[in-house]
Image (tube, rainbow, N blue to C red):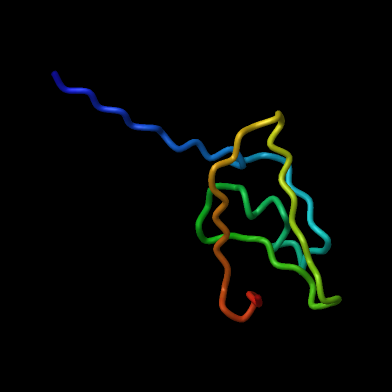
Length: 77
């Protein structure tokens, strides 16, 4: 007997409403972070120390992983 289980990953943020603390311009709006295009993304203005982005998932969901991709010059720990 063969039992196979594959949990399909679901991208909960895909094309969902997104807001951010700031946006660097028309080509860098929060919605670009969740538009499904790997060549677009959100960029904050260079003001203040802390910037944030939020995505409305539309419902209460169990989230098992969060993945953020950004350029080196923008990431700091």
